[in-house]
Image (cartoon, rainbow, N blue to C red; front, side, top):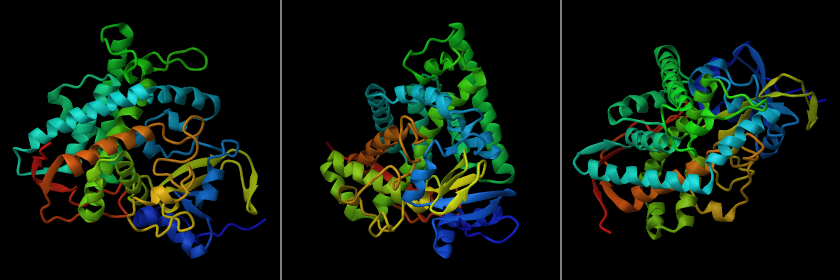
Amino acid sequence: MKTFPREEGIDHTLTLMREGYQYIQNRRESFQSDVFETRLLGEKVICLSGEEAARIFYDNDKFIRHGAAPKRAQKTLLGENGVQTLDGETHHHRKAMFMTLMSPAGLKKMNELIAVQWEKKIEEWAGKKRVNLYEQAQDILTRAACEWAGVPLEDDEAEEKRKELALLFETPASAGVHYWRGKRARTNLETWIGGLIEQVRAGDLQVPEESALYQFSFHQDLEGNLLDKETAAVEVLNIIRPIVAVSIYIAFLGHAIISHPEEKRKLASRKESALENFVQEVRRLYPFFPFNGARVKVDFEWNGYQFEKGILTLLDFFGTNRDPRSWTNPTLFDPSRFEDETITSYNFMPQGGGDHATGHRCPGEWLTIEVMKISLDYLANRMEFDVPDQDISYSLVSMPSIPNSEIVLENVRRVAK
């Protein structure tokens, strides 16, 4: 058996924090290997990168997700006992509920809600000198996601919920006060949703039966038992929180429009394919999830390396999406590549890889794409704006990465139909 290339030293957690998205990619290049061993949070960890490695990582006979997510991520981003932490039939059963919510009718309803919110924003922005696109996108998505999920949201509480939802995905990699704010936001939001679940179960709150709030309020596990209210609240937030996190991608849509005017001009046709290719290239090139974790389910051998049961393994999303073996000129922004290159669910993984229905690829990916296409159409075709001097650069160290200025727009006005 081969010996894993190994990063020397006692622990490299601080190094990962200093290098962020490029941590695995940097070592893959220095070791000239798609696999290496390191230590993170005091634990031996195997890191993988590339399409071939992704196919192994998403083999459910070789890896499990239970016990892989760090507690700090569960306390902020994911919540405890959510679908991301499950395996086997329990995972398939829970995920099937998520998949039913992503039906054509469900996606159509979300598209309509997003368009309504964008229309309201254009009218609102017309009376302002400048707007922060990232924050305003969060507001759009919070309002639309809550309505879509059947969660009542009053105007006077929308701003508070927007900020708390944003903290869930902004703080997992933070330290100190910022991280504790994320934990507090998770507690507040779960208490809020848990209270609504109690009202739905008691018949005191009427919500559409097709909504996430209703479905998870009455979802039964494999033994026929209702989920406890805390777990049901986590799963409702696992619908709302990822939608609000698309605000990061919307900020990067703004970045791409500003940075690549020649590609923006191609969107004037409003062809579905042009919008989708642009969206997919933003999802491929710009940073979102850096990596994902799983534990080895059983001892197995791959490419001459022995993987031992229980070992934590990280798969590099960021590096795989930019792997020159899969992508031509991978650091260039080129939406046309989605017409010409071979795309698989293992070389293109902005939100996880593998199969949507039976694997661990994000069930909300289709919704993300649709929300981004509508948002792109508004930004590129339905309104005009001025771009003031600002710092639109973004860090590959901060996780998540967001443009430093959060994309500021001035003098927004509607394009005449």
